[in-house]
Length: 162
Image (cartoon, rainbow, N blue to C red; front, side, top):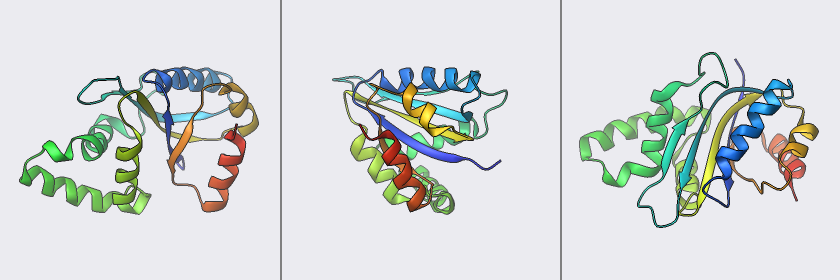
Protein backbone atom coordinates (compact mmCIF):
# COMPACT_ATOMS: atom_id res chain seq x y z
CA UNK A 1 0.00 0.00 0.00
CA UNK A 2 1.49 3.30 -1.08
CA UNK A 3 0.19 6.27 0.80
CA UNK A 4 0.91 9.81 1.80
CA UNK A 5 1.47 10.61 5.45
CA UNK A 6 0.51 14.21 6.20
CA UNK A 7 0.21 16.20 9.40
CA UNK A 8 -2.27 19.09 9.45
CA UNK A 9 -2.49 21.67 12.23
CA UNK A 10 -5.76 23.42 13.11
CA UNK A 11 -6.13 26.66 15.10
CA UNK A 12 -8.65 25.17 17.56
CA UNK A 13 -8.64 22.12 19.84
CA UNK A 14 -11.61 20.65 17.91
CA UNK A 15 -10.34 21.35 14.38
CA UNK A 16 -8.69 17.97 13.84
CA UNK A 17 -11.84 16.07 14.84
CA UNK A 18 -13.89 18.19 12.43
CA UNK A 19 -11.37 17.46 9.68
CA UNK A 20 -11.52 13.74 10.45
CA UNK A 21 -15.30 13.83 10.03
CA UNK A 22 -14.79 15.61 6.69
CA UNK A 23 -12.31 12.93 5.58
CA UNK A 24 -14.76 10.19 6.57
CA UNK A 25 -17.44 11.84 4.41
CA UNK A 26 -15.02 12.21 1.49
CA UNK A 27 -14.06 8.55 1.78
CA UNK A 28 -17.72 7.53 1.62
CA UNK A 29 -17.94 9.53 -1.62
CA UNK A 30 -14.80 7.72 -2.89
CA UNK A 31 -12.93 11.04 -3.24
CA UNK A 32 -10.05 9.90 -1.02
CA UNK A 33 -8.83 6.69 0.57
CA UNK A 34 -7.98 7.01 4.25
CA UNK A 35 -5.77 4.16 5.36
CA UNK A 36 -5.27 5.33 8.92
CA UNK A 37 -5.52 8.49 11.00
CA UNK A 38 -5.05 9.86 14.48
CA UNK A 39 -5.77 13.20 16.12
CA UNK A 40 -4.11 15.32 18.76
CA UNK A 41 -6.17 17.89 20.62
CA UNK A 42 -4.56 20.31 23.06
CA UNK A 43 -7.13 22.37 24.98
CA UNK A 44 -6.10 25.70 26.49
CA UNK A 45 -4.51 25.37 29.94
CA UNK A 46 -4.06 21.59 29.60
CA UNK A 47 -0.62 20.24 30.58
CA UNK A 48 -0.51 17.81 27.69
CA UNK A 49 -2.53 17.02 24.57
CA UNK A 50 -5.14 14.31 24.16
CA UNK A 51 -4.47 11.76 21.43
CA UNK A 52 -6.90 9.47 19.66
CA UNK A 53 -6.56 6.90 16.90
CA UNK A 54 -9.35 7.08 14.35
CA UNK A 55 -11.73 4.17 14.25
CA UNK A 56 -14.10 2.98 11.54
CA UNK A 57 -12.30 4.76 8.71
CA UNK A 58 -10.89 1.48 7.46
CA UNK A 59 -11.50 -2.15 8.19
CA UNK A 60 -8.08 -2.44 9.80
CA UNK A 61 -5.72 0.41 10.59
CA UNK A 62 -2.73 0.47 8.28
CA UNK A 63 -0.34 1.62 10.98
CA UNK A 64 -2.01 0.54 14.19
CA UNK A 65 -2.20 1.85 17.71
CA UNK A 66 1.38 0.90 18.55
CA UNK A 67 2.71 3.15 15.79
CA UNK A 68 0.56 6.13 16.82
CA UNK A 69 1.38 5.62 20.50
CA UNK A 70 5.12 5.52 19.85
CA UNK A 71 4.96 8.48 17.47
CA UNK A 72 2.99 10.63 19.91
CA UNK A 73 5.33 9.53 22.69
CA UNK A 74 8.28 10.73 20.64
CA UNK A 75 6.65 14.04 19.85
CA UNK A 76 4.95 15.00 23.10
CA UNK A 77 6.29 12.90 25.98
CA UNK A 78 10.04 12.43 25.47
CA UNK A 79 11.06 14.96 28.15
CA UNK A 80 9.06 12.95 30.72
CA UNK A 81 10.61 9.57 29.92
CA UNK A 82 13.51 7.86 31.67
CA UNK A 83 16.86 7.30 30.00
CA UNK A 84 16.23 3.63 29.10
CA UNK A 85 12.91 4.38 27.44
CA UNK A 86 14.49 7.44 25.82
CA UNK A 87 17.21 5.26 24.30
CA UNK A 88 14.62 2.85 22.88
CA UNK A 89 12.71 5.80 21.46
CA UNK A 90 15.96 7.06 19.92
CA UNK A 91 16.43 3.74 18.13
CA UNK A 92 12.84 3.88 16.89
CA UNK A 93 13.35 7.42 15.64
CA UNK A 94 16.32 6.25 13.61
CA UNK A 95 14.28 3.55 11.87
CA UNK A 96 11.41 5.96 11.16
CA UNK A 97 13.79 8.36 9.42
CA UNK A 98 13.50 6.28 6.26
CA UNK A 99 9.86 7.35 5.89
CA UNK A 100 10.39 11.00 6.74
CA UNK A 101 9.78 10.79 10.49
CA UNK A 102 13.04 12.20 11.79
CA UNK A 103 14.20 14.71 14.39
CA UNK A 104 13.17 17.62 12.15
CA UNK A 105 9.64 16.19 11.80
CA UNK A 106 9.34 15.63 15.55
CA UNK A 107 10.63 19.10 16.40
CA UNK A 108 8.38 20.76 13.83
CA UNK A 109 5.24 19.06 15.13
CA UNK A 110 6.22 19.65 18.77
CA UNK A 111 6.81 23.37 18.09
CA UNK A 112 3.58 23.90 16.15
CA UNK A 113 1.03 21.79 18.02
CA UNK A 114 0.60 23.79 21.20
CA UNK A 115 -2.13 24.64 23.69
CA UNK A 116 -5.31 25.76 21.94
CA UNK A 117 -4.60 23.84 18.72
CA UNK A 118 -5.06 20.36 17.28
CA UNK A 119 -3.49 18.20 14.59
CA UNK A 120 -4.58 15.46 12.24
CA UNK A 121 -2.07 12.76 11.29
CA UNK A 122 -3.40 10.88 8.29
CA UNK A 123 -2.24 8.25 5.80
CA UNK A 124 -4.15 8.67 2.53
CA UNK A 125 -4.07 7.86 -1.17
CA UNK A 126 -6.16 8.38 -4.27
CA UNK A 127 -7.29 11.91 -3.41
CA UNK A 128 -9.31 14.02 -5.83
CA UNK A 129 -7.58 17.21 -4.67
CA UNK A 130 -10.01 19.83 -5.96
CA UNK A 131 -12.99 18.11 -4.32
CA UNK A 132 -11.05 17.52 -1.10
CA UNK A 133 -10.08 21.20 -1.05
CA UNK A 134 -13.73 22.26 -1.42
CA UNK A 135 -14.73 20.06 1.52
CA UNK A 136 -12.16 21.72 3.80
CA UNK A 137 -13.27 25.29 3.07
CA UNK A 138 -13.24 27.34 6.26
CA UNK A 139 -11.35 24.78 8.38
CA UNK A 140 -7.98 26.62 8.12
CA UNK A 141 -5.62 23.64 7.95
CA UNK A 142 -1.87 24.24 7.95
CA UNK A 143 0.31 21.53 6.45
CA UNK A 144 3.07 20.75 8.95
CA UNK A 145 4.65 17.74 7.29
CA UNK A 146 4.28 15.32 4.41
CA UNK A 147 6.27 12.57 2.75
CA UNK A 148 5.44 13.92 -0.71
CA UNK A 149 8.14 15.12 -3.06
CA UNK A 150 8.86 18.86 -2.98
CA UNK A 151 6.91 19.30 -6.23
CA UNK A 152 3.91 17.37 -4.90
CA UNK A 153 4.06 19.27 -1.60
CA UNK A 154 4.05 22.62 -3.46
CA UNK A 155 0.96 21.47 -5.39
CA UNK A 156 -0.74 20.52 -2.11
CA UNK A 157 0.09 23.91 -0.60
CA UNK A 158 -1.38 25.61 -3.70
CA UNK A 159 -4.57 23.59 -3.47
CA UNK A 160 -5.12 24.42 0.20
CA UNK A 161 -3.96 28.04 0.13
CA UNK A 162 -6.72 30.37 1.28
